[in-house]
Image (cartoon, rainbow, N blue to C red; front, side, top):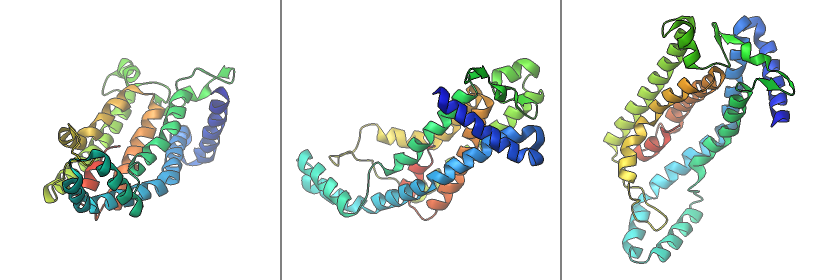
Length: 256
């Protein structure tokens, strides 16, 4: 891990040096945003594939309903028929998880980088870099201790909270609107039967984006910048990719 952190610290430092003429003291924060954008750009093909898969699964709902009627009393036959249908239509049930899974290493690497006091046996100088006076290695409770909610550092977090709240509200309203126009059919398991609890989960899903507020409050500011940038990217990307999708795709897509 130490070798990875050292290499990553050098990468962030190189980005910061590149952006310094434009952003001055905020160049490291800008480098983190740039890094996040590059990660999301690299993952974008997976997001497109996930959108195609979700749309295909939505189109298959009538066929799945027919299989459920036909093989409802034979779970093994139902599962085999579903696998054959998915294979025939070239649809992977796991495609929607891949974009999030591929982003996790980047987030945790950034989190550890700005949580470590020493990198490669030397003091981690990145911890002292700031965004409008707020150190990138500190958390919201540090900002509250320095000047309160409306202090210089506190205002930085209020700005991030505002962005997350706007994005979450956008996701919520879009999902609710799509669900009203096209009610979601119950999610089914491998045997084609409705999954217990999925109805309640579908109601909670539109609210999941608001949980990002908690993440931003407890992680280092550098990691919070990653989360806010990625969340905003996700909202814009999915609004575009699922613009012609029925509610099932939009509802599932609203979760970060």
